[in-house]
Image 1 (cartoon, rainbow, N blue to C red):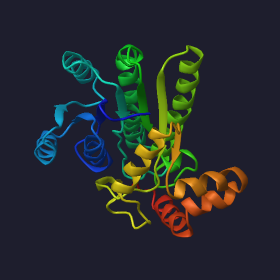
Image 2 (image 1 turned 90 degrees about the vertical axis):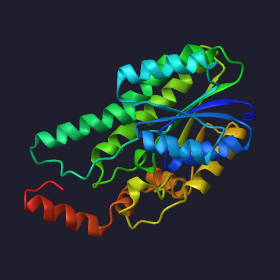
Image 3 (image 1 turned 135 degrees about the vertical axis):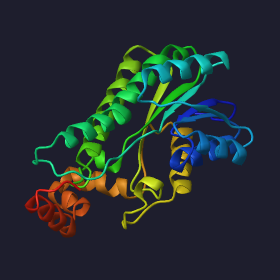
Length: 263
């Protein structure tokens, strides 16, 4: 896929992976529109990348999504929709009865899964009308193996991964020219992972590999440790699970359960 000259909309584009993607897509000749909830971060991104267009919008909010679609349509539309926005809540111990678990699970699912479907539905006809267009959905290494510390986040990414594969196949059956890419990052150094001590990939390297995969029409883009975990999860599932959930995680989990506390 030739990205030069394409117009790309990036959700969650004011920081982290989304902001880095905006920088690199702009550098190769794409017109980039970013969206996010934080107006200050959006304004800072516009100062950092003068060619950028920023629109405040929350993917969880249906009215915001409709407003975003209308504004983008007036601008001439897009060729690529990059569903990058995602949220993760503090770890909660499943098996403990609490309304907090349902509240956080609903929030994560609404942003990470339903928010993607909402925007895809809004922009689908626009993308179908373009000669060379695409959707990028960011799933996760945790769509392969779940994490005890991130149970609902893992579940949202599994749901999104299955949806992405089926969306791609359905569009193929319809002979659509819309390409569907799935990006599976490992742990990336962003604000969301700041407190984690895991090995982390830089957003710069992740986006480089995303762009390289898109240019090669590689529809499933596994990056870094995700490549190895993919193989291990297929042939050695228990070992893969233990790598994602080391002994210390089990100890912390059991301690929290014994105290009957939510963390």
